[in-house]
Every structure is written in C-alpha cells, then in structure tokens.
Length: 113
Length: 113
Image (cartoon, rainbow over all chains, first blue to last red; front, side, top):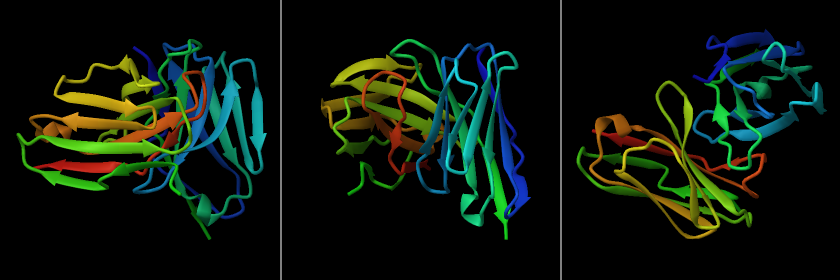
C-alpha cells in the first residue's frame, strides 16, 4: 500500500541555521508533491508545490527538492527563525484530475532563539 | 474575512447523538473537501465535492453524510456518533479538481464521550 514517511521525532535547531525536513514515499508514483505548514489548533497552510519533472523549487527562504528515483523530497528553511516553529506536512498526488492529495503525518520543527 | 470557515470550533457530545459541522468558503472555488485528522495527526481525505457533485468518497462509514447545498458550502452530518469519531475535522477548498493547493479551515475538534 502507499506509504508516506516523515520523521516523527521533532527537529530542534538554533535560530539562523538551515532546517531540512525529509519526506519519503513507497508504492507511489506521484506527479505532484506539496508541502504545508500546520500550527497548533489551525488548519494546514500551503507552502510550495513541485512537479515530478522539477528537481527543485524555491520561494523566499524555502527550498524543496523532489527526487523521483530516491522517492524522496527534502524541504529546507534557510536562516530559520523561532516563528518557523510548526509542523510541516508533505502531501502527494497522482496525475489524474480527481486524484486524492495524500498527506504524511508531518514533522514538528522547533527553532530556538 | 476568513476564506474557509467552519463551525463549530469545538463539539463535545455523547455517544449515539447526531451532529453537524458546517463549512463555507468565500474564495469562489469549485471543489470542497472534508478531511479527518486523528490523534496520531494523520490527515485523511473523507469526501470531495465539485460544483455540488460528490467526486471522492473514501471508505467512510455511511453514518457520515456530506451535503453541498451550493458550491460555497459543504456540511458534514454524522449520525449515531461513536467514540472513534473523536478527531479534528477539516474543511478545505481548491479552485478545481486539478493538482492545486488546498485552502483549509481552522478545524472542528469533535469529542465523543
């Protein structure tokens, strides 16, 4: 069955460092991969979308890579700030128009001052 | 103005009761969704509607019945509530059925006692 794995342990880093979060998947050939941020008591908020034929996407301090051979996406936040502390979810979707967006469990990021 | 709003924010009820959660989006989107996030933080699709038509219905007990009176509203009615229904329910919307980002509401925390 399809599986999306994100590190269940929280990632603790110091302010100013680069945070790198991992999303691995098995038994899946997604056409699209998205990253969302979720704060406690709130709904997920979209951050970035990357297509299977794209290797990398950037938006301000965020960078996402998508390696369909390794079946892995890496999500980087450079110059991290305490305000970046949240849970980050990756989500995969197939190519068809009615394909469901399937979420991983997310990784909590804690950025300390 | 909140883009995707759902009510109530909290719902505490007894086993066996029937309850409804309402969702409205003011983004002009064609597609709306219900997701369930359980205690392990897994976010799973339940239903998807496009222009008031049901397009995705995952394996959800038929005690759960979505209703879309128009494309801006998607309500969720739950009959005969069970302890295992306790979770956070998120409404979301997207412009179409393609591979686009989702806009989530802030969630309804349902506790069944």
